[in-house]
Length: 465
Image (cartoon, rainbow, N blue to C red; front, side):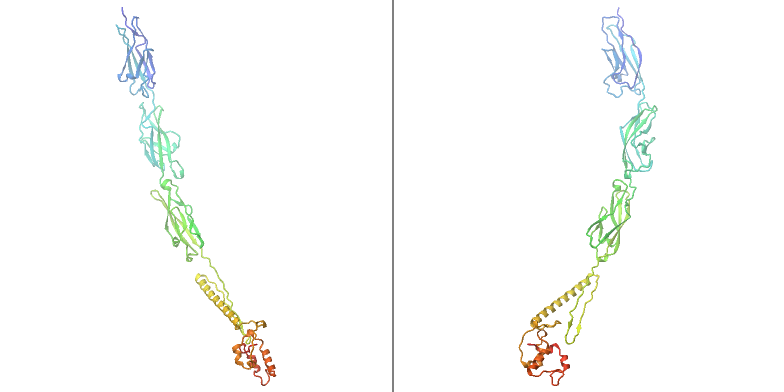
């Protein structure tokens, strides 16, 4: 008589953890058939049928296990399905087995919270603690429906930031300042969601901290001085510098002239703070110190600015003193022994007009002296050039006169030339000896009295042969 096949280890109540991996063996089925004439093989079904793909039976090993190709991060999920019933059937061609099943309970495993996004971004402006905030729009779930706490994991300057748990917002935990690179402008933090059992899920937060235009440009020196001389070449004199601690456009400084005086006609400002000597200053500016007001302004919003002072000193023009001495010719007449002299006095002038006038006068004087010298030389060649030099015998000109020439005084003035005549008395003696009668100035009958002889001038003496 035929008997029913049976499972030797079914029915059974089994458990499996929800985090069990693919291929996990649930049980190995054991069965028998008292009639050895028929080969039998179990056929199993799963409830709920929608998840039957998660299970498989290997006939060669009689293993009932989780499928190897589920292609899900976790094949089982307690929160979704926590109970399965797997029913297995044996049939020998005549009879079926009875009551063979596996009640499979899925055990809950505490799972970490899960953030919706792998990373989030946040933009803040430097500020005091708690002032600047960003809404992270964090979305996080816990598979076990546990209560969650949001935290910033330690590291990478996380102590400088703070999460506002209820609003899921991020803010500063300290007074945050990026000026002068005191604190970083780009920070990557790790945020965590912690469940009741201490399991933590994580995500990344990329933070950008923007600079606020909260600093005013400051001049490195409140007063900058430059000195310009009359010999100064046109070009750069130097620079004025103002520093702004802000970064980016907030820290970029431009310079403009806000006010000043006459110096602006000769000194100019270029955009980068350069001070340039652009035009020669006149003599009237010498000895003056002029002020220029320079405004340093940043490119931030709202614009911040400050004013610096530039003092330009124009040195006096140097004064050139010209001293000129002119000496006149002194003429002495032999008979009267009189002389006259003149000299010019030197003068000092402190302007170009006076110097020019003096130069013109000197030129005229030199031309006059040259003309006089030329005239004198011409007269010397002709035998008539007055002077104080004593006549020498080498300068005499030999001439022949009649004897009565010396009796007639009308010839004396016409022909007298001091340079070519010898002493007057010698000629009178020679004339007297020829007459056989020597004249004496005091004798009676002399044609010349003593006083007349004394008063005879150079033009009255007879010309010498």
